Image (tube, rainbow over all chains, first blue to last red):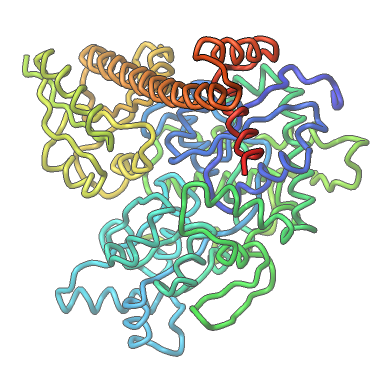
Length: 382
Length: 194
């Protein structure tokens, strides 16, 4: 099967201008698509809704997509319903929670020694309630996103009900910084590079990264329709191989890719420069403006730790959270949905190949050790 | 039957004005026309539209979609889909740059004509824009050609017809557009002239 002729050579892939779209840009620039016999056109989009719609109606062959969106669209949440699948994760992590300078000061006044705790946030919210102050406004990027699920998980863990204790709104990532600056929102939970943009321009403080909620969490995936995957299996394999190579390349050459990322991300965003792209890519994360503070590399992981494997345990967590918030129809069989949408079998088939040796292929579809996720198994009742 | 209440969100005011008129002509009610998505959700709550037509190129679609799940707010706009599973209409809409949201289960039979009008108007607008661009380009081309012609007449002592024919011959020999030849002549001449 591998190395077999691709059924379709010319492909259109959609992506959102975010740091984690980098594997697509690199696969194009470094010629990995071409090596696999593919001629790829990359299309930058303005909304996740557009990505979904264009994938579903066949304007795109594949897309950079939010992992939960694959599940949501497969059962028609929000409207358009078409079975989508993923057999390739584009990486792990990347998200962070940034609060406005004003909220940061309030939090510090609450509890300076442990201000990065959700419990401080809880205490502050209670205090604001008592003082009849308006609810805090949090923003995230899309309802069916890892961002939203991680943020809600973090809030709920501290006993904050994301539906009643705060106002939770959806904004395009590129508008987060402006809304924070204008005090329309008090905090946002989004992916790279938007936290760094806010911090480096002095409009906010990073309170925590997604890794404080779940070390090595799923984020974006390569999505295709189930129909497409059945029709073009060899093409799908070729696409996965090219992207794997790009992710692997990035693991060793991330800094070299910065000019490429800047070129694509600044197309429609005057706020983007190379400085704000560096932290998530290199792991030299800055939490507070003008204060160097770095974490071990790993804010955005493209390839190591088997980052590209479509773990069923990832999808299981996503579906369990969607169920928790009562977004799924009651009669839905989550295991079935997970097995339908996440396809490690295709990943293995694509990468069992002499051309790409030394790829670690897990035998299990579930990652046993997700203990990194704070109390993953207990879904705390609100 | 009460006419459907339509809300338009489009940052191209000319286009949305054309669409509004077309919808009014059909006896529909346009309850709100927004040029930016500022306060989008509040406007949906205030105006309670049955259907929302939105420019596909607006990044605020994701914000609108959040109404389907976030909080317990009513109304809940759901992206337009055909009950009969006819993805053709959706494909056409996407192609034309239209997205449509139905609120609280407006009958699909009442949605289709509205969507058809929106698609048609968006397409017309696209065509109009293309035509305008062509006209502009043509005008610009004409200016370059006239300038090159004038330069040839002056430097080579040709009359107007001769200068024009010389350029046309060059264009045909090199199978390049006349405007490109004219541009080349201007570039070369400016290089040579002191």
